[in-house]
Length: 284
Image (cartoon, rainbow, N blue to C red; front, side, top):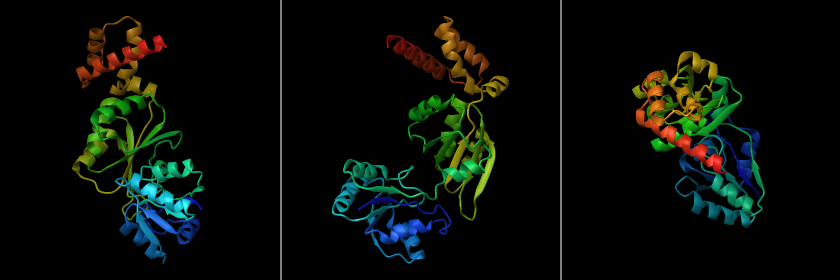
């Protein structure tokens, strides 16, 4: 019998498909992040099923137990607290186990925060790049943002209201102060979409904002960056400067003169990273 990934409402409990309700009613077991949260949804639609816990902290052990049930011929419906399981929520571990054991899998279409946020943001909805929650460690976050620096796509992130200001500040250090939008509390009473800049959003989150937040950032625009002198252009200049034979010191001084507020050590690290990349490319 199959493993069924069932999206659940991210706000309004009416945002669930008839097919999802049928899958929940037909399942032998419903695996969920928080049994209390899922019980609210099931009670709303008078569905009484056995619930088992499947969350980020027990994903491996619970996944093995669920696999045993699937191998016994049970139908398992997997849900997260809200949205689509496996997309920035637990789900991939049991999905991978099921695939490895040739178990039938179905993933139902349904609610998610990303697509409504894209449409409400005011930024181009396609093409887009979705990452999810940025890394917790500052170095890893900055490395991620550096990799995304030159993508000309709308960039989509989930951010915590408590950590968002710090994460956005790191974005500004790499991207510059790009146009950006926050969309929060999707499908709830206080749904809001606000298009402004990264710095304005950072300042607002620093003052305290509640609710689930999707952050959307405009993609790289070479003409716009060149005309406005945004910080996000300085890393893109390094390869050409190195090819022209400029020293690390000269490149550092030039960037510091042209891009105010950039950390000297960050520039040197970026130059050394680029030199290593060029060396690795030549060796290959």
